[in-house]
Image 1 (tube, one colour):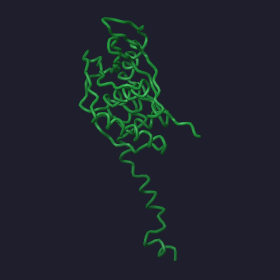
Image 2 (image 1 turned 90 degrees about the horizontal axis):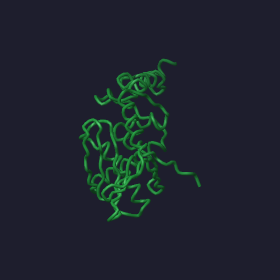
Image 3 (image 1 turned 135 degrees about the vertical axis):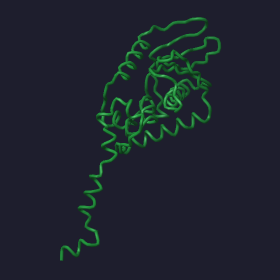
Image 4 (image 1 turned 90 degrees about the vertical axis):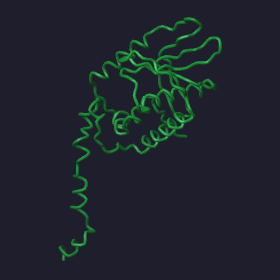
Length: 214
């Protein structure tokens, strides 16, 4: 039996943001630093270094490792809050920036919930995102819609890893904030016509080829 490759939780956020970014990081093992990623790493170091504690009936566990073989996921959660009276637990994911319209962060958070539900055989109705830039906590209801979207992204990342092929670059305004913009070079790569030129150059099925060789 071939060992299953578990998907890091972070890969889901990377894929939802940009499938090419996900492939560069998790297939090609590329990485780049900018001031955004540096701030994010510093934030998570501070969060993970905190000691477990109990306040007002809530137990706070930090840097919790999770593994969900059925889902094919693994990773580490920034914070889990456990209500000691009900036993209900919910993760809190810390992010450097601010709340987003797109679901990139919510998908990663929902995947954390799915991992906990598999591991603990429970139902978790809500979780939260905390944003450093705004000092704002966003409560997230784990609706059927976000759960289904998350499962779709998990399946898409599995397909990406199995294919082991990095998607073609497609330049977008969000590329400017990506730490891999120099490695990806999306403006150049997306306009690269080299493969098309070579295909035309060596296409032996062109109608005029037989005429030129006679």
